[in-house]
Length: 471
Image 1 (spheres, rainbow, N blue to C red):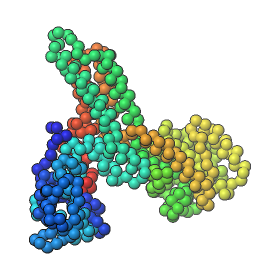
Image 2: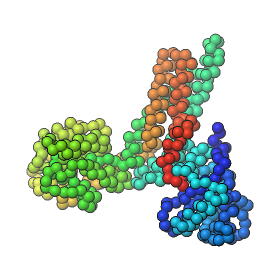
Image 3: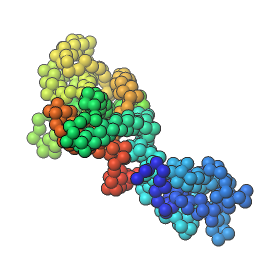
């Protein structure tokens, strides 16, 4: 199917495009072949001209009426032909934001031939009509859900194309070679080669490099989209809950002198430097016979394994250098950022500088970051936030390049890389064209599944069911 020139359905859908609830304005969207005709039945322009005769991309003031009874005075914006978000005729009524008005207008549209839109159906039509690649359509949902500057930027980048053109260009080149190799099969008895094998090797290398770079970007893209997970860990009574409260500037976690107060994880989000940080207050890590506390300790260790940043709290009264260094080394994970926080420094003396220096020397190669704070007194909490902001900035700088944020895209890219590596191995083993063609087709399939060149109803249903109604 040539999606670039297709009006996808014969029915017309309607839904509230703005958030539900009382507000100043509510936008009700109609999309489909009969959108303008339906609108002309219910909308009376003050200019006395029907919308069907008006130019595309124009706005008209008038009234919405049912049986000559005015429901509301509103603006009607029309988009004709394929020059709309969905790629089909669209009318948007900007009404007053009354729940009653919205219900009456939608009922009026339904009574005149429209049907209620399904979740994400407007964007689904935009994809099916060639207005958006599938990964761009998915980015629309991410843009709506973005709650930080970083997640907004990566979603906007994806919606504007992201790596779509890059993938499509590589896929087209691979498709051209695949066609030549397939052609060779028709002349197998003549033993001719239409596909230049040296050029093909160069293309395979380019595809591998591109796919590997995009796959590696997922770890960054995922945290930019969903927020950076930060685990606050340490022994019982190290001041973890106090630190969480200080960072949030509110009494979120229970603070007590009794060891083992926190037995489950507490998560809160804080925006620093335009990026969301998901702070996780964990149970104090120690050997315990208390079954419930032991579960909390196990959860704390699980959070450490998944966190991008680990804030390890200690003080010079309850911790030794050996305990601190052993903990970091035993829980060290490549790629995570470890930050040592010498807490309760309001109770410490200047002699603890040597204590801190010894820790850093022992952990050379594991971490070079140690900050002295007092969570209880709020000392150097701003400095900690500034440090995290700088760390976030390094990630957001990476985000200026193309990054992958969607797990479906990540899996498709990984599968495509595996398939292209099989093609490369086949070339080295001088396999016949028919065997090479199998792995080339698999690569093309996985690349096409990202942009929607190949798709099925089950996949599309799963993707667009996550959208809100009206988008």
